[in-house]
Image (cartoon, rainbow, N blue to C red; front, top):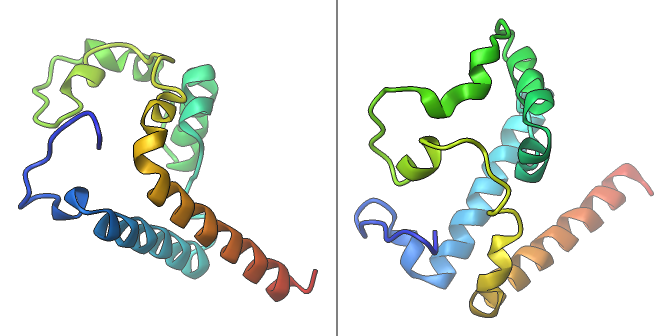
Length: 134
């Protein structure tokens, strides 16, 4: 988001803090909706887990999708298909750990977004505790 410039017509929310917060909140709401409607149908794992143990996490993903394991799944960077997204440079190289925690470089600039996200997360945690009677 902060490393690539998106076209305003494709991601207008990426140019405005309020819209970005709303977009992230709507994304989280959508995930929560599907997780409530179909529990166990969405696999959630951290990027850090993937880069620290790609084979384990990829096997979990393949199993979750009821697909057959192929060791070539770990060699995605050797795929010769054309890539037409902003991630072209990342897709054409093996997994790398240098992006882990790279968001911290932008922390001074994204403080309003982090604060909003933290407040929403705290609110959800409180609601969950109240709902579960804890």
